[in-house]
Length: 418
Image (cartoon, rainbow, N blue to C red):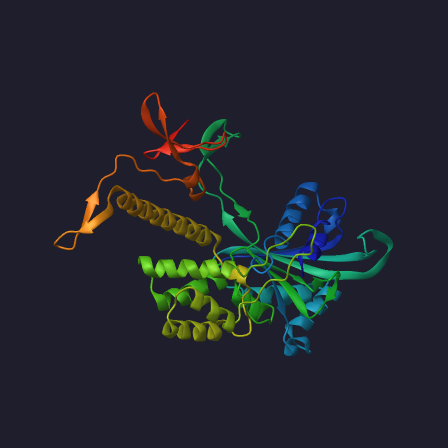
């Protein structure tokens, strides 16, 4: 699924375009007991409920592809009879009207979803009549196919915080009544995936709000797919691999790590206006080898990093964008700018010392050059040298330096208006 596919579905999650046929849910307590379950015709819901449930559905289609949204593929075994993909296919075909299948699905989630606390399982059914589009993206009044899918959202249910409030029945300020509130989805999925505006029964789109610690156990045990790193996990894992080898918390290792980030950032293609979005660049083992060499990592350290990188990520090779921390790239730019300024200051100091004492004449007996101090020292652009001449003005010998209107001068390091 790409951005266009996701936006096409998400745009329909509003009152006048929504076509959800049915909504089912199950409230689960902290002891994994099913407290209550329900099923509703979605379009019959009261407006207040209607919009709240739509907000939850929208969240499952939000975030960044590759980070909050991951496309997972079903292994061949899961597409055979008794597999999780086949179970989801049956659930979709029932349009959520088979209570036994719904109970089996709730049990599947409860058994595979590792969460401490109460939560609500919501499942939406939809049938989207996909309109044909011309090459210029204009819709035609005919259908290419009907995309029938399930959208599942798993939402934490938390007790409101204690506090004071107005007790209308007693006309006084008193302790507020605490109740259980459904929060934004923590995890969810869309099955089948909607790829290139078409049904892809071999894949499922997985959503996670927490990109640092997604529920990989639900990817594997609940959906029957292999777990997949989020972009955040890839970045943090890569940082850990590198720092474990080169060390951290000292200026040299920090500089090397920031240079690695800088060199990886150079691999990210720049999107040009009015052109298709460029393909992301995969960071293979050989790419990592080149980046490490450019960043000053020793051969021994690089060998360890490269092997660990290959062992951890395997065939799931990260793209450059997922390994780069923009804050570190920005910090490195400032670090280099500071170092450059320090070097410029040192160069200027050295030049100043050289102009204050210029060696002239013959060497003395200790082979130390004689030194003459000048009363006037000029530093001008090379093209100005031939223009300087002496001239007697009002009986005083003067040096004359021609100046154009747009030229500026500095005397003893101070800008001066001539």
